[in-house]
Length: 203
Image (cartoon, rainbow, N blue to C red; front, side, top):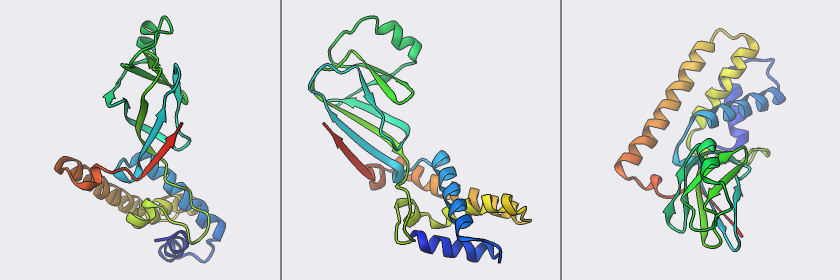
């Protein structure tokens, strides 16, 4: 379902004569933001590859970053440690094959610091934003009902709508169904657990 269809369906379910286009857009966008905070499925998986050609102490997280899944350097998975532990380890600018990483704000710190190879970050990322009515993304295609009811939870707060509890229940129902489906596919080795939705290459 594209953005325009989402807004039309949202207005049909809300069924209020005083809903405006601007409010419809706001509620749906708020709903998507809520979903992104809670849902973790292959739909939001991303891959970022960075070629290393000189000693590298940090890497910058992508702008759509939500949560780290794993980090590799040339097929070796790095172990995440706390910043406190990282500072204890990183008492010099030692270079070599990285073993540990720590996150601080928008940076990932590496130890030891690699001088070559490729860093591969697997992460959960935000869904591409919607602007034009013809726009869609993986979430709106696969879970349009979830998006609509996420938006309705915000609309019900705004209007003090008596259906607030119903909208919240439906949202949680759809969220649980989609999350459990994704979890089952991970356990069963389904194809969705293998291929991320988006890949980014940086040099």
